[in-house]
Image 1 (cartoon, rainbow, N blue to C red):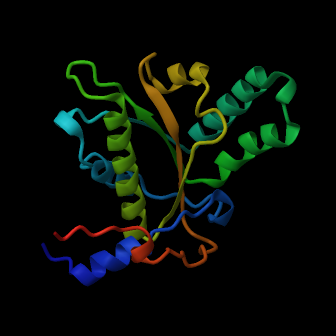
Image 2: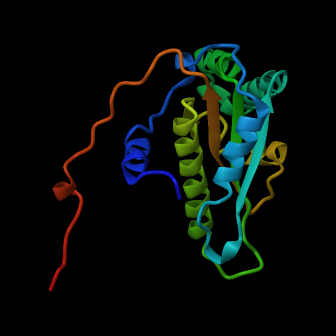
Length: 195
């Protein structure tokens, strides 16, 4: 491989969540780049080579389709907890992105693989999306808000009863960079057993 370990380490350290209000509104990422990012996502590790991820990509007028669906589903399901501000946000925020990818987990049924391992595989695919965006100097954000955990949402994203909707990934060109990330010292997170 031609990538240096130093460049790889920098790629990992420079991965950030970039939120939709930090995007250049209206600037479209070329479809070929989005396709490559999704190819990279599909190279994530997964138990039994089940590839449990299921993506739906919204762009162009599809962003409005997504915004309308999620805001109306929220309105129908919120009941007395309905907030007009949340409804407006669900209608408007998607329009700031170049692309939105729904993150789905198709449940493995042919092999005896625990559900959690399918979820973990999809999370690895999302990390590949994050790293790919960093390499392309694009911004992105994985959200599990809005309608993510509403069972009624699944059919819209071609997910079955045993499948899970794990959120949405917003992608765009960066207008405003995120602040540098911080991490606790390794000594606070790692135990070494050497004997």
